[in-house]
Length: 441
Image (cartoon, rainbow, N blue to C red; front, side):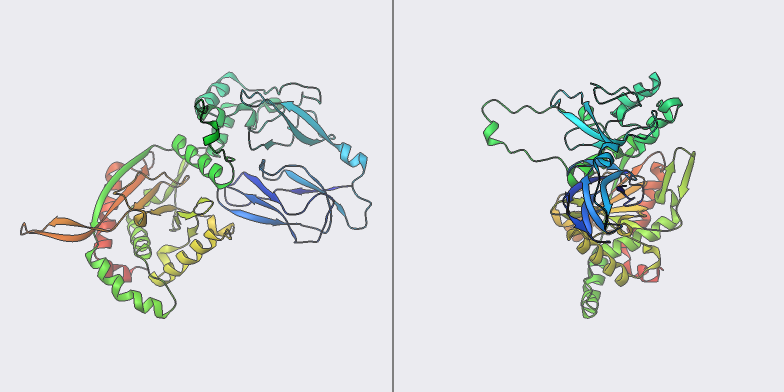
């Protein structure tokens, strides 16, 4: 009998992964723990090892396909066996289903063990060019379309949210999709591209002057996360500025001391520590909303997600327990996570557990931005360029001071405007008096 290799859970709250590349081809032998496939989620890219030794007989999904966790992606035969027989192959029958797509009507091939019960959904795959399909148990190898059982209200809500109804797992009788199923699916961030994107048509005569790249990988994962954030939060912006004169002096004094210990001390550890201090007084900004349970989750820890730009796109590793660490330890963690992110070496733990985000775009210029909230977090802080600006002192004299704009995006469902302003004010107090951060543990 063939052995299935299931796509494991790759990170917290991740429900699917994209097959980036197969490292072992069909018919090749593998040993236990040998990397066989590279998989990417919206949080991390990893090489998955084989759980056993044997022969990789069949890829059940292709590079570029998006697969739900705990679904089979490959078939193996054990060492010493004669391989997957014709009967074994037949047990994974192909179900060819035409995709309703104005741009591309090619058939999508799905696999399901033929011994499954009639009402069991087939193995779900979303390809690089089209969305995931799901059978309601009535399709066969000659079917030309996929029927989905759903209550009318669920269909209406799915259309309003831009979700593909075929991609939603129903919990009603015979898999019928209910309204709650649509809401649950929306939280996962799986958005129907055909309804949320505008069809692009090349201007006449310019086709040869355009280049088309596959919309996949980190770029697609980032897109899904951004659209989900837009749909699921009430994003509101508050902007303020801080005088960082003392921070610049303190960092300049501590930087060579840190360098003697092999640590590069940037401004970001100071900002993170100040954020951790302010969050103690304003827990709503360090929370998440569990709509299904009807509860607000207040977090007793401060794990700061930080945006890192890489050659392949934006990734968001997490610096854990910032509230319990000193500046140099935070600086070490920042450098370690950023280095791993740029080398593609982040682990599941490196991208899990974030409670508040910071995006530091100061080196790129600009005044300020409106950051996208990293769901399910409640807020994200944008830190911008430190630049000398005119400041009016109490005696009405005007001096040039190093100033920085801070832009706080917050989910107004969880955070009131007054709380956001008060949080930012306390944050600025800590930044403008950085010696106080040395007392924070």
